[in-house]
Length: 427
Ligand SMILES: Cc1ncc(COP(=O)(O)O)c(C=O)c1O
Image 1 (cartoon, rainbow, N blue to C red):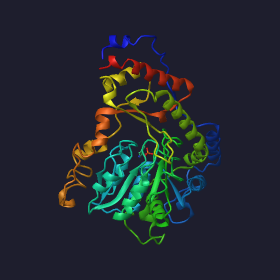
Image 2: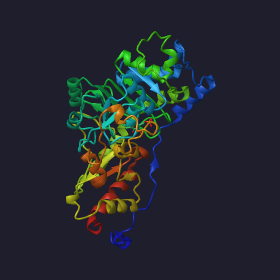
Image 3: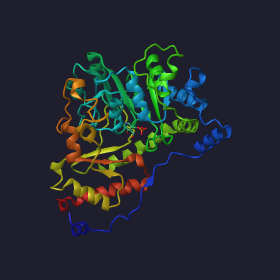
Image 4: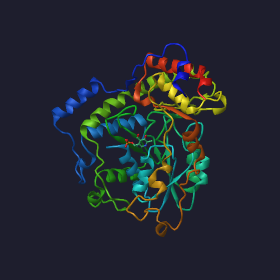
């Protein structure tokens, strides 16, 4: 697209205004931090069996509040959701060389947690409507080595848990739910992340609620909960005193969340419902303003479920764009002052680590066929839906990064409308 074509758009350019950055931290969190500092206890963990194995008062309070809010038996805080995923995969008793099915349309940590235990990620494609893992593709990818499914509730809504739970029962598989991006989303009456053997949420700075860095695991299973607590806090040196006789994956870490972060988390959790509601109201306005643009496909919410809009995943029907090219539409929208748009998310199976099949050392572990006795395919083409979004028609908006008030919403809608009126210039 040449710039003289852009000039043909007519009318004044929208005045560029930087979108306000999302900030959910307020006076409540400041006061909570001050209380912890005054108290002087910034962490109380000890890697020894006893009360301090479970952390300090703020850690315990956040876990208690989270448990009550999400209606689960155990909530376990960790210093990041990446740490949480590592605890989860370890706790289900995964063995080196076992396969875990995971979607490629996610953040790399979903698959790295599998590799962390020398197990093997196997990629199942995503559903083109919700961008979440497709149960049909899960079933196609099951092998005699499959031990678990890593579901990802991507972008703000739950995957199709009813279908996934059925498959897991049929093949005797464990389910881990990476609900990093969708805290508070509902699947029928239940919270996303709470229907799996283990689920959990990220508390990093761009999530709905956050503690800077952090995460929370949830489970209704006492044994899995204890295993995750062990992995969080130096399992190897505690497991003996705890009289825990299962030594599987008892290499521990320091994945402990501090008292300051936990105190912030307690205040943030109180705000979750209102923060979700404000995101949903913004989305409602975006649907109203964008729904008549031919060829622009807006996010669809699964029936009887809610969406919390971490992302606003859009795509394009290329046959309805009067010949306009996606890259040119993207450029034109950016020229109108829009931030947070992107043409790519991730197809993590295409990362070098999978293409080269080299994670530990130089000999290709854990894929080395002397060890696995089989070949794992990560070639382009294994996840056609996910790949074609990235290659052809994805257009995403990172809603999580911005405070969207009326001004920003209007800017976004008018920019899209203006660009759509001028699609014929964008071929
Ligand atoms: C889907 C998904 N999984 C895992 C993670 C990792 O979470 P954290 O940054 O808390 O380690 C993220 C972070 O953005 C994520 O979006």
